[in-house]
Image (cartoon, rainbow, N blue to C red; front, side, top):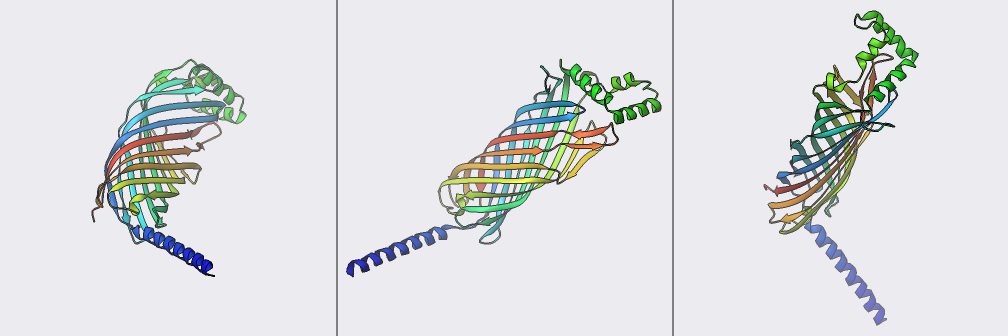
Amino acid sequence: MSSQRSKYLSQTLMAVAVATASMSALAEYENRSFSVFGAAGMQYINYSEKLNNYYGVNMKSTFETVNFVQRSGGYTAVNNTLGFSIISSSTLLSFEDREDWELKGEDGYVQQNTTSLSFQTLDMMMSYHLQNGWYASAGMHYQKTAFSRFDWTTGNANDAYNATIKDYITNNPAMMDVVQQYIDQFDDISNEADYFDLIRNDPETNQTVVFEDASNFGAMIGIAYDSYFMKQSSGMRYQFSLEVGTPIYEKILNSSHNGSLERTFGGGLDVTGKLGVGYQFSQQLSTMLLITGLYSHRDKIQEWSNALDSVTLPENTLYAAAAYISVGWNFE
């Protein structure tokens, strides 16, 4: 009986100790605001466009660069469990590199050009804290991709590119009906050969500088961790987040087209993440080494004005990875 009582007392004390430890750990949690500034770093970007069955053509372009970027913003505590953050990142200095346009099934390239690409993001997220450093997030993700393409050169696959488009249009009766309308309507198009000479891809002659701005608003949800919410005294600080979302509204302006392309809930995927380690000097001051990543995919947009003519934004994919050194400050 005595041993059973001792065993029961031991188990009870152990349970109380665990509960007390849990309560103590829980008591360390504090939802506090902080700001991030002075975050500068380098960002690697890989951007590609893909055209599938574009007048019979399958083509892909690829571009890579490293840019100088900044990241800033802050987190505001609303109450013990809720808060919100506003974080922005943008290119401070973009570097140029060559972009290749490859035609499927052909060696070489259709054309090449020099490209400069700038990338901006803005995330406005609500946070629901689990009071152990982890929190769920949901909100809006905005991103803008702006690039310029120039210094065009023609590749050895350009003839195959033009021949494929010509064969595709020629073998499509509805498209050829529109070609005949152009022949009847315009003085500078007197026959089919004139039309195909007019639309022939000749980048060195016809292309100067092409600008494009693609803006996207989307919704995101995610999970994150920040040791700051468990310990504001001096010591190591850790951050982690993973968020996934989809674009809700897209607007694209391209200098090659007279007008903009717009789409709502058209399809796409955004994935963002961060991993950080740093040191909390005091409740007010910290520094972080932060690694961020972003994956963005957008489906093709194509608007037809008639059976022959269309304005197309190719399917595109962007990968971005950046490393930052930042300073955090609590103004309370």
